[in-house]
Length: 246
Image (cartoon, rainbow, N blue to C red):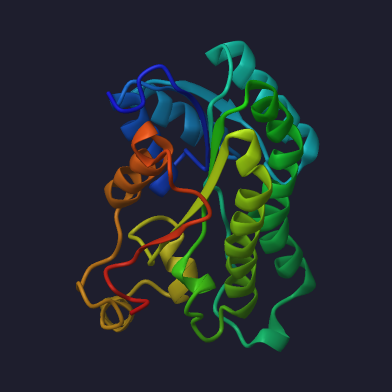
């Protein structure tokens, strides 16, 4: 019950890492607002694990505002925000990635964190505590070819995490990030371009522990980072990567 009594938002909770994090938080005693742009998916997950489902496009400020309002209404407040939702572009030479894909990647992966900060930080400052956890990627630390603008967006997330942490520390607010290696989630095919045994083997060959990350791996790390056990940890970009960034 490491999250007992905590009230949390988890974005991108309709599948993959987000669903895993939400499930672990609920099992550890938290109240959770599960947020995803895919309404049917997030409601299906909520029916399976519990929590409150909420549909939102976190690249739109009005949707983020409604998300925060829903958390206050449905959960009775907010202690933890997990900015997990993310997208990528298909593997492509950097000069061939369309402007629409570039804008979408930065709107979802970066601008959503800016919007969330505008709306959540004042609440956390008022209560003089709170935790923000940004789900980044090893792509922001050790970029892969042909994912250039996705790599750059996750590098932004890592820098933003540290900048937020140092500014918000005097208010009792902790900000950290997780940097997972590619996981066997709906985004995997987008990273690889194709989902084939050969492409999976190629990806796995770059991970010393020899497997993809799982929702459980991220959930365990997120639970620790958002619990009181990590009360002295802020500004950290934790690698959950099986040794890929060594």
